[in-house]
Length: 105
Image 1 (cartoon, rainbow, N blue to C red):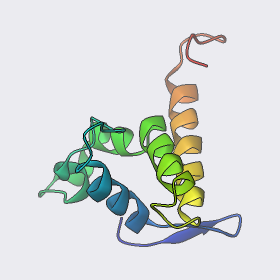
Image 2: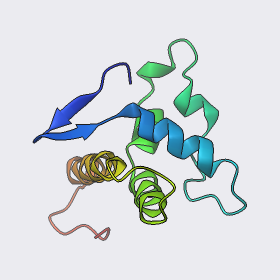
Image 3: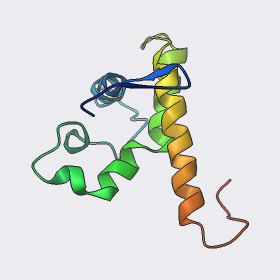
């Protein structure tokens, strides 16, 4: 959250997640319903809660950012952050699976 970084030359910025939440929370149909203000503005010791991190680094947040980018509501560079979130979500799914073939595609 505190530092931006590049993955394979593509910028990943926390600013895009915060901007997505700010825009999405004002919509009638919310694309990432589990995302709350607590995820963006962490209270003390909340940065140690894996549940909050997993909800931010999720497919629904990535899909929401992709949607905002495709509608022109966010900068095209935000797609790199969405791509990173999607890859981390897939990594979580891989590490949490108990069988070789998991029902979640």
